[in-house]
Length: 102
Image 1: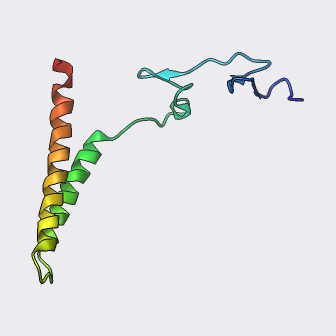
Image 2: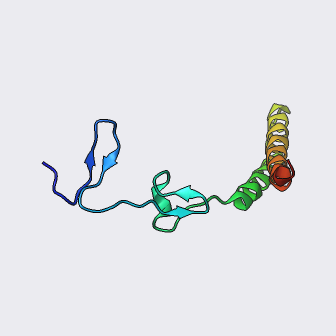
Image 3: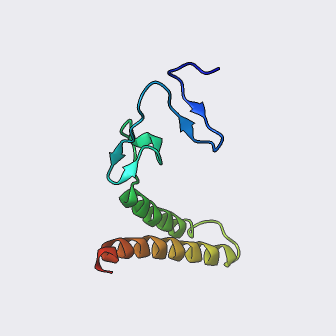
């Protein structure tokens, strides 16, 4: 048997709280029922860091072209990957800036 203060699982998998009322904490439209980390303060994404990282990876791919490659196949792959990372990062920035206009 569960004590009166510990949560118990119901038949549907929901947590049933005995002895106290459970209230969800909502921060910026995100509920602690959906994301428990909201309740203790760390919750969020870092889109600027992700965009910057995409550009850094693209630059590293282009820097890696200078190397001891005998054939050009490696260079082609590095350029294609660099263009892909650059395009994805730039596309994400453009989508974020124009998303409120739709």
